[in-house]
Image 1 (cartoon, rainbow, N blue to C red):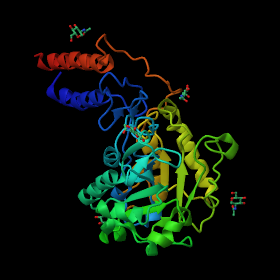
Image 2: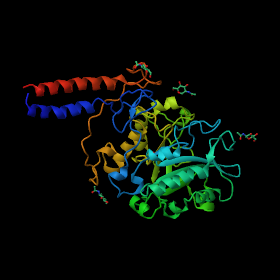
Image 3: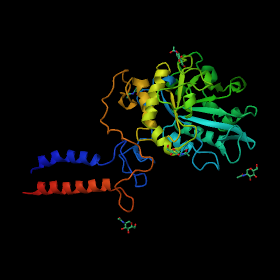
Length: 400
Ligand SMILES: *[C@@H]1O[C@H](CO)[C@@H](O)[C@H](O)[C@H]1NC(C)=O
Ligand SMILES: *[C@@H]1O[C@H](CO)[C@@H](O)[C@H](O)[C@H]1NC(C)=O
Ligand SMILES: *[C@@H]1O[C@H](CO)[C@@H](O)[C@H](O)[C@H]1NC(C)=O
Ligand SMILES: *[C@@H]1O[C@H](CO)[C@@H](O)[C@H](O)[C@H]1NC(C)=O
Ligand SMILES: *[C@@H]1O[C@H](CO)[C@@H](O)[C@H](O)[C@H]1NC(C)=O
C-alpha cells in the first residue's frame, strides 16, 4: 500500500469517527454521560436532543416580527424545587431558558408579601405556592437583554395584580422601562408588526402582554387578546385541549382564524404538568399540532409555541417544532436549518439526512449498553474498533 492509498483512507476514517456519536433522536442514557453528537444533549427522556432552536435572525433579519416563531415556556418561573407546593412546569431557571433560546415567557404575577411575586396558585398567592419576587426574574431578563442587544423577548402575564400601577412599578424597578415595546406601536387591525431590525435599532425589544383588559387603559400594558389569538391550553378533551386535529381558541381569545389579531400563540401542555408525559407530548404530537393550528389559524404558523418542560422530548422536540415554524415563516422551507442566509423565499438547502424517529418513546430511561459503572459502551467499543482499524492501516502503509 502506498501513501496515496493512505490519503484516501484518512477522510473515510474521519467520517467513521464522526458517525460513532449518537445522532438526534437516537436513544442515549441520561445517566451515562453524553454520548450524543456535538451540539446535542442526552435529555432526561433518553434521546439525543437539540435543546436550542436555530436563531431565525441568523438566516434573515429583515422581516416583520410576526414572521418569526419563538419557543415559549409555560409557567417559566415554576422550576422544579422552586416552591414548597407549587407544581413545577420547567426544569431550569429563566436565565438558563433564555440562554437556550427561549424567547417567550409566561409569568403568573400576584400581589404578595407587600410586593409582586411569581406564584403558581389559583388566584391568591401563599408562601407555599410562591416561587420568587417578580423583580428577580425581571432583572434576569433585563440583564439578558443588555448583554444580547439583538434579542427580543415576549412576556405573557397571567395577571392577578391589583395594587395600583403594580406592574409598571415592578418593570421599572427591574430596569426594563427602556426596553418596552410601546403599546401605541402595536398593530390592532391585523397589520404587520414592525421589522425586527427596527425593534432592535430602537431598543424596543421587550413585548409585554397582560391578561387583564383594564391594564391597557390604566397602565398602558397591552391586553393580550387584542393582539394575539391563542388556542385552548390544558388537556380537557371536552373543550378541545390537546385533541389531535383540533385547535379551538381559548374562551378569552378571538377565533384562531381571526386575522385582525396579527400574532398566533399555540399552547401545548396538559392541565397538570407532568414531566414524564412531556417526553411524549413534546415530540411528534407537538409538530402535528403545529400543523393543525396552522391550518385552523387562517394558514398562519404559530409565532409562539408554549410548552412545559421544554427540554424534554424525543429529540425532535420543542426546538425542532420552533425550527419547523421558522422555516415555513422565514423562507418557506420545512425547517429554518434549510433556509439560505438572506435567500429568496422558497429556495431551500437540501436537508441533511437524519436518522428515523424512534418507534416508541420509553417513559422511563431506556436500557442501554452500559458497563457496571454506567458509562456508555457504545462509544467506547466503536472507538476501540477504530483504533484497531487505524493500526491495521498504518501497518499496511509501513510495509515495504
Ligand atoms: C407561611 O405563612 C404562615 C402564616 O401565614 C407562617 O406561619 C409560616 O411560617 C410561613 N411559612 C414560611 C415557610 O414562610
Ligand atoms: C373560522 O373558524 C371558525 C371556527 O372557530 C369557523 O366556524 C369559521 O368558518 C372560520 N372562518 C373562516 C373564514 O375560515
Ligand atoms: C404522568 O404521566 C404518566 C404517563 O402518561 C402517567 O403514567 C402518570 O400517572 C402521570 N402522573 C401524574 C401525577 O399525573
Ligand atoms: C443579510 O442581509 C442583512 C441586511 O438585510 C445584512 O446585514 C447581512 O450581512 C446579510 N448576510 C449575509 C450573510 O449576506
Ligand atoms: C467501576 O469503578 C470502580 C471504582 O471507580 C472500579 O474499581 C471498577 O473496576 C469499575 N468497574 C468497571 C466494570 O469498570
